[in-house]
Image (cartoon, rainbow, N blue to C red; front, side):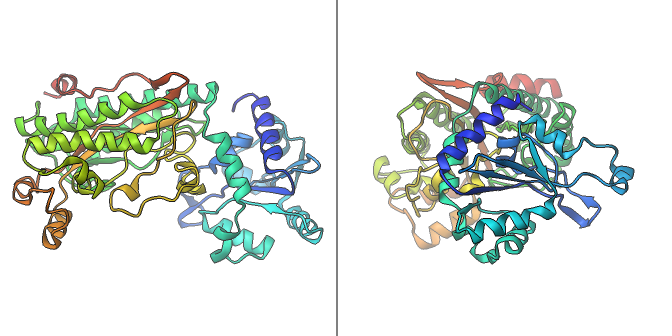
Length: 463
């Protein structure tokens, strides 16, 4: 945890910004895999962590914006719990660490909420992503699970985003810990991967490194020879000479802060000439995006500059024809680059995605519905304190090639005969994490190998 003054200050700012009523902030419970006592890795809700720092199941906090009262609701372990889980600090002692002086049993919460409702007071709560919390809201506030999203407090959503979007110095220290461990994970993969290995062996090693650093993974590992599938979590393939291997993985610190990096490297000791051409086009798009990062620049413009650079390189190779600007307007770049360029990162690897991308990444501006552009999670003007990822990619997706060719989508800008020659190429990307500073940007953590030369230097350790 940070110093309790940090959490006190955050809660005071939150209460002031929301203005009136009660703020109901729900923590997460344990989540069973296949029966009650066999649970997934526990992860506290990130907004609950942000305002309390407490990673413990079955807690709920209530902050009164009018009186200033703060209560942490939860139940201490019984002797039956202690037998299985060991002695644990009391709820009151956990609350004291973040500056909350009042605790009550969970059984007291419903009465508190019913009193507020009877007085006509607002009860602010966030959108809910776990079904058990949806059931709790139904029991406490009589809000049907299908109505929770529309009943969630926009005032609370905006107030939390207005704090969590801007990372403090102590948060940056934590994020850099996560990024440095993530770099270690990627270098280890580059140095160990050999033809004949299973993807699962590499996934297991990077997971070990994350856990050995005292934290966990910030998201499920993507470790695959099928880089054209953007979120491929299958690890059952044997890797072979001549293939590309895409690794997208990151560490999470014990306090919950995330790192998120991607690398693409050859299964062989060196890239082929064809792989080098595509890789360097993608890397040029990556560097073009980094060069634009500074306050006042809409991230949407950064995305289009990266896409423009990629399309120019693909035109040089004969995949693209016609006017590049027209091709971008019509979304032709999504044949190769169907995803976004990056996202906010912090306590969540996709920071505050549960609160709504339109508010976090677009500041309330409606998102595009165009294929490719609609997947851009971040489009708003950049500001000092933002932490963002940069991760353009080039992907040859056979199903997408077949669909667009059959429907003649963007045929004015795409050379489908040339694209067909590469339908089994796969996909690649690099990803790094940046802090937006008052005068530009700063790479977070130690550098990750990303040039052809640096990647091949790491690959030499495996042979």
